[in-house]
Image (cartoon, rainbow, N blue to C red; front, side, top):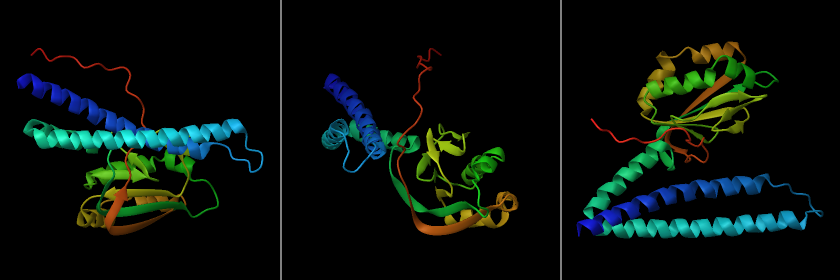
Length: 235
């Protein structure tokens, strides 16, 4: 019985990780398909075949993800150990940014009051980075910029004439969504920041909207982890 439980736990973990990877791959296939060139009347057979292959792969991945979900649900019903493990897996998925979430919060929009690209000044003055850090201090539990989920491993950097988040270029206006206690956010906006005044001086207009439900998508792309290894604690 113990051996069977261990096998079930291992299989559950494998399927949980597999399901997470599948979710990311679905989003990436959508992006690849949208980036494929389209020329009405002269679309080559190669591009048409590639689009068809992407659609077939997307359909298959969704089927596999559905099967993984069914398997996880069946196993967690059978075993109290797996129920607790499932709860932990979902918690880590949330912390890693791999789940779509919604809740009360606010939406901040940064737009240029001038007829120019504000990416350079936003990066030079670290406005987005400072804003994200201040929102976290104000109690933000989940944050996104232009629908890019910001996690502990996300980067916000200047690349040419645009800003990248999670290795993906973003164009202004920058729309920052944050989920958290609305009262705390209102106090932050009213009393605790000079960022908005500084941005206004630099030609960046800010607008703030509070909402009972703010939806933030799951993480779709992040840098791979290559150089660390897990070691056993011998202490």
